[in-house]
Image 1 (cartoon, helix red, strand yellow):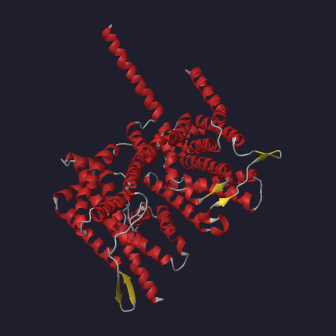
Image 2 (image 1 turned 45 degrees about the vertical axis):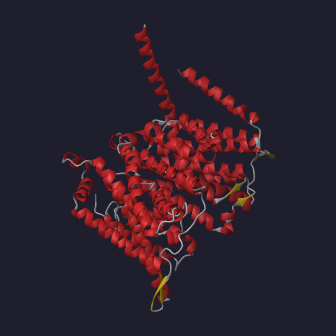
Image 3 (image 1 turned 90 degrees about the horizontal axis):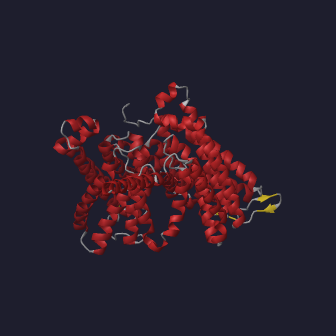
Length: 322
Length: 288
């Protein structure tokens, strides 16, 4: 079983490496780049919403703060994007701490309201501090990264750069999920009282999960700015935050590999369902809605159990025939 | 100066009543099911589109007739919502209940967008004009909003206190298991609650047409601020919603005197966060 999983992973990795050569156009490369960034952000969301089961509907707001921090440092102050990236991580850390504290007092729907309010406030501030952020006009000319004086151009080089980043974050996420932290995240959502009696500091662990989620989102935001070269506050709206939770749900809540599948499905589906034209969004939301109600364990697990069920049914039938 | 403050107070109170009705509309569903209906702003929008878009503009019926026909449609929408969304989600965990209602809202949104397009329109002559009291000039729509809201609240109170269905709704609010054991059909109760809530959504949607015109995003802000109203007043507590709504409306209106008006929308969210951190039970809320 383990070797089969490894083979699938290697095949997927090879596919990811040759993908940009098969679809070599600016549009597709930007789409693939966005997919990779979304994967990184869903990894982060998985800690807080997937494992500790605290709803975060302000992901787009955190992402926006990361994106603007990095982009403003590099466009207005002329600093290297690498410094911007570090600054975004730092800001993510601070936001995570800040959003984590409310989560100690409130939970469930109240927490989701707080995170929605946070996202809306961020968007309003970005929209109206025109002299700094460019407001609704947007922020242009976000520079690209360079390594040892060589610029990583947008397009195929930047795709590989993001792919490396995604793999690094994937490795980090799986390590964290399997570590003491990851088990503590799961424990406090399964049974907080039992977890506390075993010596887990719930407050500390909750804030830790929030901080990790915010760092991932801020990092994703900074990379998003570098990928697009252009930022606009209206991108980071409530719908964007919802999409991340949909990715999480589709992949199966709490499963790191599932996060990748969810992010790919939600980001690429518009391409596959392009023939639906204007009806695409209605179809997509309807599918996601039915999925939420009928397959709460995620699509991959749902499809697997469906396949098993069919196999058992047909197996029974053939036994009867024989 | 005094005139400005009075005018702000009237428009703040009118907005406050809108938020209060939003608070009441989702609190009813919260009390019946334990679910927070995140699709409520889309139902408000749907109400406005059905009344103003379908019956008034497309079919050319007079306003009262289109309103009554819309009530019928919205009751059906409420039944549909109860069967498709609220009843299946009742037993699921928070993430799915939140996402389920959000996705249902997105489906309604897309449906409206496909049927009517994304261009906003308005109903000419609906609640327009001004009233002069001394040197004070008040928009008629504000007066209408306050009057309609008071009537709705009074009617709802009478319904909850006197009728058997209303009493059953209050029982379910207090204890779902016990009321089920006492022979109250909880599922049926949810259906009726959803229908009442949808009709209130229609009324809200119709009332705010003069303020926001009929557009796809007309209710997204009042939807979120209605949540703030509920939290400020006391979650799931109907008189609390009214107090919370008016408080949020007045603070928001008064904020224009102190900070740039572009940040007016952020004020309600800030109030929401502050209340959740300091007094999550709200002004009138009891300790749970």
